[in-house]
Length: 210
Image 1 (tube, rainbow, N blue to C red):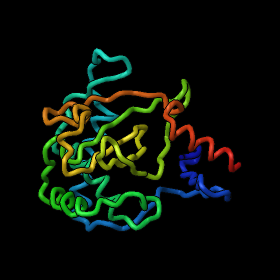
Image 2: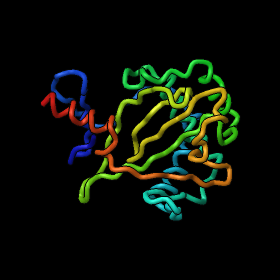
Image 3: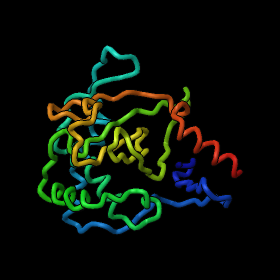
Image 4: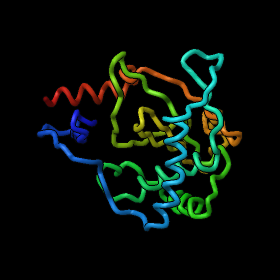
């Protein structure tokens, strides 16, 4: 979480200890210059469509929108780059992300600029709303679990909850319509952050350590 000086406030919810301020984020050297340049193209697209030209339509379900005009390849490759980097990183913050044999497959997809089919390593994105007048500028260490028998990895960043389905049989996932579609559309439901159970539990743990 950033403070008023744009420093990161790093809190270890599992331990009672003094909070640590960092001038910037958590860094670890992972990529060569060429790969950094490639990944930055994906990142710029996501930044542009999320924060500059956020084209979307209402759906017939309350609290849900459909984002349109996405570049399927760039957006999907950005998603893949996030989970792949988390898997290869050595920092304890990402210790819950271990893709096993999927790690090498995703690496080859990134090198080839191949986003794969919409159901391959699909990611559901949920918008998180704060109370009026408040922002939601929080990054939580990713974790993992199972959904419908598929391995799932859960990230929070950019004011959203990102849920990746990592499975060799993800085509059978019943909610694959919430993955980025090859047509360049993405269904995004919104929830109040404090109503998401694991976020509420985390906040309670943080304040319990005060």
